[in-house]
Image (tube, rainbow, N blue to C red; front, side, top):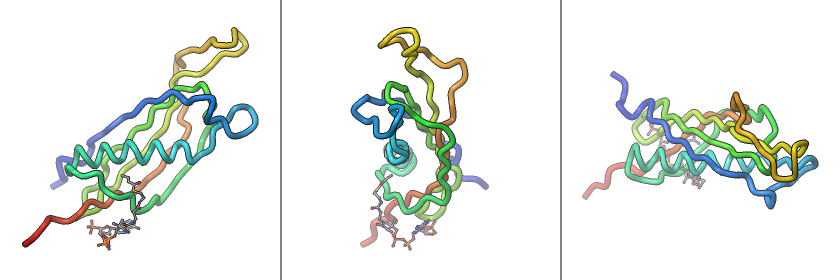
Length: 132
Ligand SMILES: C/C=C/C(=O)SCCNC(=O)CCNC(=O)[C@H](O)C(C)(C)COP(=O)(O)OP(=O)(O)OC[C@H]1O[C@@H](n2cnc3c(N)ncnc32)[C@H](O)[C@@H]1OP(=O)(O)O
């Protein structure tokens, strides 16, 4: 029988400040999205296990579209497998808003369809039960 924590989903949403632009075209580095995955995994671990957990490994990371300063990005963690102490999670980062500099310096829009910027699978490990 599957664990009731499987399917638990947590989403964080964040504006990407221009201070994080790192590459030509105001692109941000991929590590920015991995930091979002770490934070959303932490909340998922708190909700699933009452502990922040420790990120043990990523088994797959795919950067699928650029993220730019001025984007609004949402990152989702979904618990896909509950082991004894390991929690496998699926991650997705999506761009939901983006600047429109062609329309004005501060113009921006909500995208009709979010752009999937990165996906990953990772494992968080929580402490075992305290004994004694
Ligand atoms: C939420 C985000 C937080 C962060 O970003 S924290 C910052 C980055 N992470 C760290 O600093 C963590 C550093 N690593 C460690 O401290 C340790 O290294 C771990 C605590 C992650 C694991 O060490 P140990 O407790 O000794 O592991 P075991 O007793 O050998 O295994 C316990 C369960 O964890 C699974 N596991 C261990 N290592 C890995 C791995 N590298 N990738 C995937 N799974 C792993 C095992 O299979 C098992 O699972 P089963 O309890 O369900 O049977």
